[in-house]
Image 1: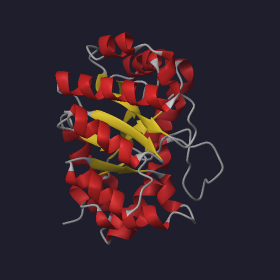
Image 2: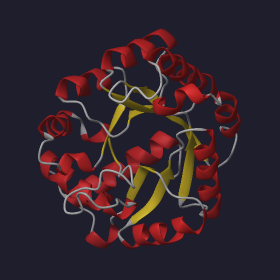
Image 3: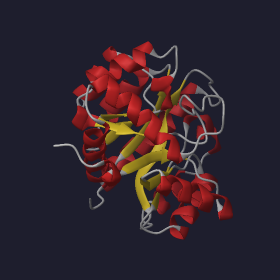
Length: 258
């Protein structure tokens, strides 16, 4: 049975909120849209500390992650990421992974830093948030060599159905962003169709990747509802049912009460 429209609850589990007072209005706008939980994501030691600062300022609404993005892999700081995992607001290791599209850090260093964070997630029993772009084979090679954590999410999934199946086969969940609304994103939409509903999360990656009808503008967590509408249509389910399923899956993935 579908939930009533006023009972919809959304969790934007991957956004990048600015520290200080800038986050407050964004969090409030999200709540008005039914996006009542947010996870702000660290991409290097400094931004991970900022994510914790924002989460502490919005208890019970915003949580944080701590990780080193492949773009920043050459800068170091793994000891800070490990220490932050003990903070009560931090739910996961990442985002981390490989990005061969930009190659802002040498690939060998990307692989080394990614492997270290996979090992950290395994050692602590924490969820792992993966960013991968143009690096599928090496991403899976690192996971194979180090060991796949019990909870893995491929954030802002940009592959097609073949890559989706590879991710699902290792037990991962897939997270879809506003890209599903983009005109040239047929492979990503095919991946949505291939992904079981119970293995699917939603995100904005705000302030990036605003969905249609906000394409080209600054993204906000409130806009996850537009991605949800597109995903529900692709899956052939009511938005209310998608909300209920994704709410449960996201909270269980991060170990939060529903």
